[in-house]
Length: 144
Image 1 (spheres, rainbow, N blue to C red):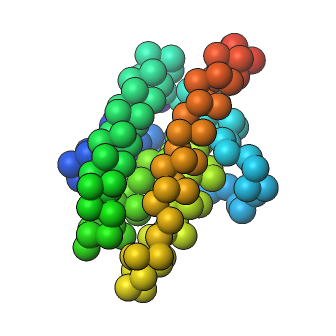
Image 2: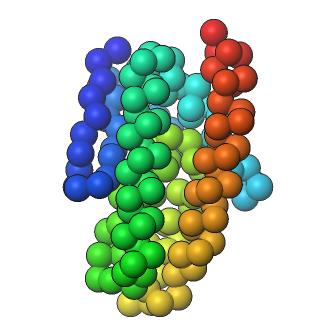
């Protein structure tokens, strides 16, 4: 499968898989932080080495985005940052994080950026990242 990693904007990573479209997950139980099926599909499509690279880039870029958002929590670009983060999170299977970013994006789009609960989004990322780190090895081994 051909694949490429595209930089859509500085500090935002989006994953483009040629000849493959992923169905967007429907709203699920909010307690389900990670869509492991999405992660398995991505891993199978891009291979182990590329998957590790994509995950590393995603985690690194999200940390940079969050650092910038904490310094300027309600800047004009909040809607765009949340939109890009939402897409990257969804591509990597961080389902709940993607939903929270979507909610924040909608608030920002309607002039309510000050109502976006960035601390909830940051906490969700940290919790998702921890669960991802713990459960990923088992998930990948189950796929093989």
